[in-house]
Length: 618
Image (cartoon, rainbow, N blue to C red; front, side):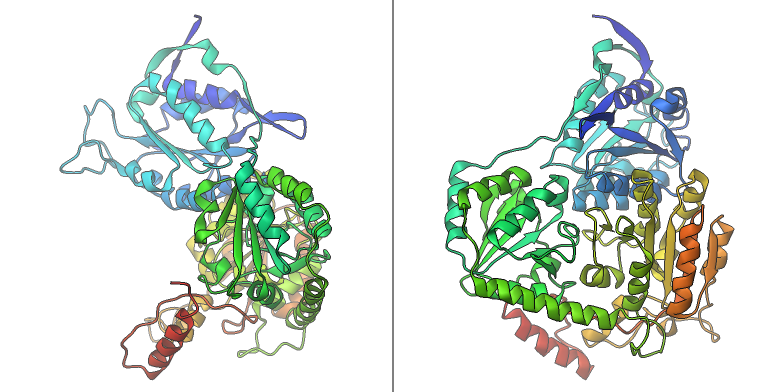
């Protein structure tokens, strides 16, 4: 057996560079590259190995470890999990900064390879700089915090261990069911140790999307249930995108006259004006979809884990005889909510259902209700997103008006990016998606700070698309550093900062549960007598190399967006918005209200909360 002598870091990099993926008949590198912030725990080992790799596995310098991991996650999501990136950090705080991002990837079932440095395997210099010392267990390091938020975790304490660990890591990253973050903690001394690796270990490997078909008995049960349905509703989740099943879903819905509602991850499965489209569903959903969800006798959930925002904390499916079917490649998700499971790849599963159902369709009255519900919702959309005529408490523009302006300025193939606060709810209800990849929301973990870094990752994945990032002032303050990275890499993004002076979404929730406005809007926070400073987001963005401007009102915003689209570099537009006004919700969400309070408003909210909980099945 022919062998090649390499350091562990060199071997790891060489292995990653040899991984390939076939997409639409084209063979591409599986890994676009590696985001790296070097420190004493990885600069000598991984740093030297990545330098030698050059363009075979490009290295990108970031400004924040969490931010670069968000960008890598967004890159994978924009590529439907078919291509991905790796991230390497030093030990200690550099590694710890990525833990939040690992949780984002874990919750959203997205692949990212995390390569944090670790302490010395030989322990000779212990305690090394940035080492966390556990008084009872010398094997514990900062990287153990990755264990609960990684699909696969390993600590490499010998150079030959990657021969067995890396294939398992790649299997996890590319597996439709078990997809998620992989963490390989790399002991810093082992990174630099050499080993005679089998040359065959580095043979290029071609990865293809693996598709699992349905079990015949599960398929029979699901078909029988659907054939008895008169008012079925299909809920499209992110699995529709990751299975590349957009066409199959559209054909299935059209042939069988089934209304289609969308989760945050599933949005874009149908265009907003498709005849079967009924809008977004759940707490952040449209009244049109939620109305049908309450009436449906069968819910066919496709590629979704049905989290509480989708189900209205298990109160949305109101028909007492409703039956739930879960078509999902993951067994863990397929049995949720006591559903009738159909464990299968979405594309293959829909094809099998389509053939078996033959010419069966939903009843005509149900189809008519869909049309009426959408007509009413579209009328409401026009009112709430209008540039003028929308009343707000402060007289400032609402979030919905801003999104209306961004939509009018954008093209069908442009991408909108967001993650947390009130904006995801407005986007889920109101953004009219015209392209399957035109909507990019991280709402599984709802991670503040994902937005700008995520926009960078989307742009790297889709360089020919315009990328609009909408972000509140709160999220901007949490993590904005990758705006500078976007300028440095020439990856232009357009960022719209909505400054409502605080955490407007949570302030509304606080008041909605009877609480007094407290510690959310800056005016209700402890501060000096003159109050919190007015932040100059445009000036801050300019200091990071972006072109920027502050505008007043929707008319000025629309003109600024034209300038932003013509810019060659990242462009930031900021404006003051109203923190109180939001579009109409039509679904309850379980947020526990204090059982005892001196505030009458809280006591009233608690009584309403108890009444609402009676709609839950248990």
